[in-house]
Image 1: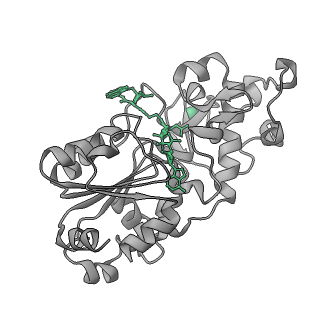
Image 2: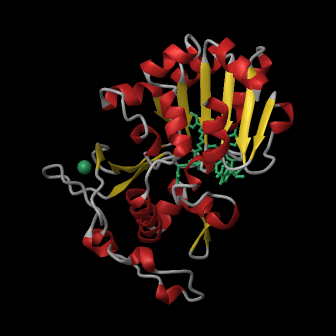
Length: 278
Ligand code: BV8
Ligand code: ZN
């Protein structure tokens, strides 16, 4: 632990690459393991443009279920520990380690920006946190392509209550919601079908050029609660290592690529991270 503390204080450009394990303690299911199934579908198979084109009713029920659970969730101690590193007052403690601290999260639940309690504005939170896979409460119109933040619960009457439908062995038990009754664009004269404002597999993640700059400059990479199986996020720690930076992995279990880590904190990150950063 002392060696990690010394590495933390000696660093000038720290990044944290985060995944679903960061929000597990907030009650948000992870993608792998038990959390990875929704009804009888593998979550990954529903996070694609093809799945949405084929069955928008099913994909919207999947995202409605996750929207509702994200609305009920609160940031946990791990979110707040990372949030601390983005705030100027704590930077005095670790200056200049935190001057350029950036959170690069794969999570779409919006919990990291909410954990920066003392940052003066949402813009400041956005500047220190990159939600590279989008936000579960954003919606994008498939006609006019307008992106809107919409946290209404439910986002449309037809989805109300579908979050309670559990895995069934029978297709007929799954409601087939007409497209006209799915979330529609409110722009005057549009009424286009809305889609969840997240980055699906095969789609370009957000702010990649900005992320690449932070990765290139990083001298310490914290890898928090991710199986490191989804790219390009899974490649960042390796890139930091390749230019002489150091890597600290915080995970419940061993994870892909952690064999090259300089520091390995096994256990729930809501416990290990506050202790290590404290
Ligand atoms: C793209 C949003 C290019 C939707 C998600 C090489 C390079 C580039 C691309 C690829 C490549 N190889 C393959 C690809 C394609 C693909 C990919 O990576 N496929 C994988 C399956 C091999 N990548 C893409 O398609 C990406 N797009 O690269 O586009 C491009 C470029 C230009 C122009 C056009 C295109 C886009 C990927 C984004 C997909 N969207 N999310 C939604 O949320 O529904 S991915 C989604 O799954 C998450 O966002 C996350 O990224 C991923 C799940 O991973 P984790 O977060 O790690 O979660 P997981 O459950 O797996 O693991 C949890 C971990 O936590 C575990 O290790 C567990 O032990 C641990 N844990 C649990 N509890 C705790 C804990 N740890 C600590 N404490 C705890 N309490
Ligand atoms: Zn529209």
